[in-house]
Image (cartoon, rainbow, N blue to C red; front, side, top):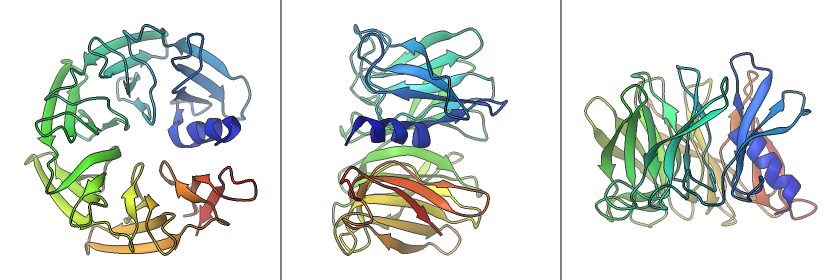
Length: 302
């Protein structure tokens, strides 16, 4: 994957608009003054790129925020997770005040029962709490779901992923219109190809909804997206008719899974990240390989 494509991937899939919707904020897992990543902003027209915070090489305040989309919370601050660094070199939760340019490490993962090296995004649910996942750590070393209270600074582990169900979650969680959180794991299920699940924040109950397979798409990667039509949309990095990934939808009302597109070497394949939807109902996303130059493609789904 070339650097231009990687930068585009970050900007499109990890960007965050400020309330004025004139500036995009994002992160890079590498680069910056110490090579450990940076928080940067860019104007909406693609000009005036500037590094706002460079993660230090020591990693004490975190480093390498790979795949960790930022969340603009109700208090106006940006929240996110770091994959590495922190007091225990297991990642951390941080806040960044875009008004005062202040970075604050809020919770240091220990890499044990509380979770280890978060690689997905945070989201703020309707109850005001932040929710996220780690792909490892926890009681079974297969990842956890957690919440973080931005008012009290309290971290709470909510669920331990297990061997016989979905495990090693990918991406982050979303809150759908029915009030449930939805997410995906990369492994688990009868085919060990991943699971799509819901989590009820009221009852603290996780429900496995669909088991991925080689035909339906396997090893899902990235976030889900709820469409204007109410269905969830996402991508798998493998599986499908060519074993190069697929786009799918899931109807939360009828519990119906539908494969929508099979990736190939010509269309681009091995997609990473999630899909974005425009107001006209078109979806956009990217693949990491394939296309004319074999460096990935930008895709559109009607």
